[in-house]
Image (cartoon, rainbow, N blue to C red; front, side, top):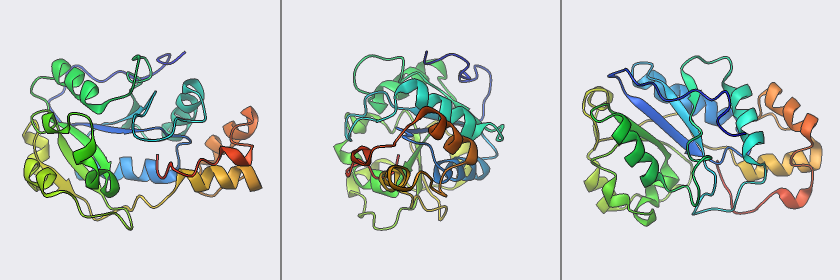
Length: 230
């Protein structure tokens, strides 16, 4: 059942709380590298990987919620700064980020909240549900992605560029552009490699063993062509 054994967001801390959402279908090394890099940039703040239940802007996950949670737990086991928050899996309906941000802001009225995005997601943010409500709720940390389009000027204006220290002290409304790591791993390509070869070097060994044990991503048609990174 989603939620069993999942670390809740801490109730007592004044440092940043970092949110990294995605389908994680499957979670791969680039996800973990990105999460660790953002934590390091923001004073080793905790990062919460938040798997989507029903992502509104992309094809639906192929692995079910319990399998994706199991793979996430394996992938983060060696990294104490990484955690899981399964609230979107427990919520009915589409996994709109605005609902998660509003809920977390109620739980942490003054704490800095940081939303991690790839550069491709930043370029499309103006199309996200109620995105104009984000600036009072969270900061953005943006990771590079090869080939990403230029961001919309409205988004850049809503989130002025800042240094890491400001994201650790102000509650919301700033944007930090990190130079690395690149989010250059495609979940589509991973699923295709698993279907065709049964292995992929982009996966942690324990995650790959879980995939083999449970027979996940074994049919070539499972390599959905429109899901590029999470």
